[in-house]
Image (tube, one colour):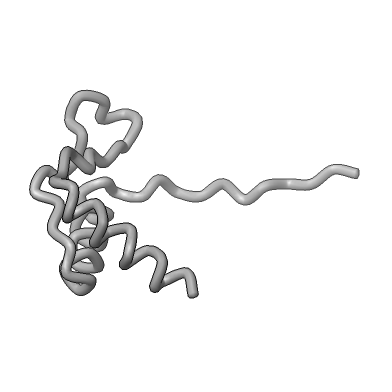
Amino acid sequence: MVTTKKKQAPTDAGAAVEVLRDALTAAGVVLPSLGVDVASPSLNLIALGRVRTEVALRLADALRKGCV
């Protein structure tokens, strides 16, 4: 059996950063270093950066609430 996998167009990293930033802000979470990873532009990576412990815990709480 042959299946074809639909190839998804790569998402613009800059647009993805803005969508993620908006969602995190709505959840009360700020990742100060959130941005496009310019070191590997061909990979379309997003740098989440370093955060304080309380920010990591707020992020974990927001994710748990979204998974319910």
